[in-house]
Amino acid sequence: MAVADVNQRRAEEVGREFKVRYYTDYMEMIEKENPDVVSIVTLTSPHAKVAKDVLSKGIHVLVDKWPKHLGMSSGDFEDLRH
Image (tube, rainbow, N blue to C red; front, side, top):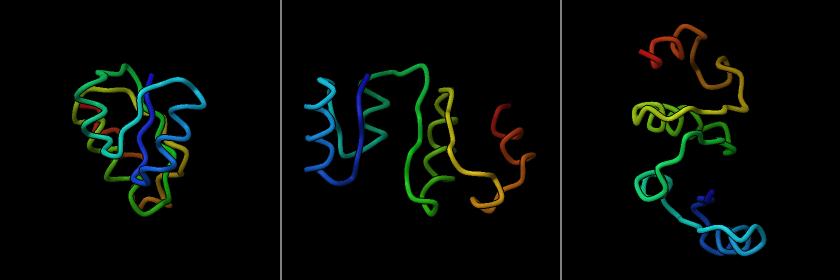
């Protein structure tokens, strides 16, 4: 388990609180941690990009935004699965 946040201070705080490694680059975290699943909890604007990046690595994703808020349709997510 690990946490990534672009805010170094916040990443460190959460990492210490939960006793996990922390990163400021989610792709670095994915490469080093090789997770089975990633929960994406970001502002709406970067959500779709992060989801696509993670899915492209074959990793399961938990997304907390509706596809319409990401400028995507449900079918767009289906396309990413294949």
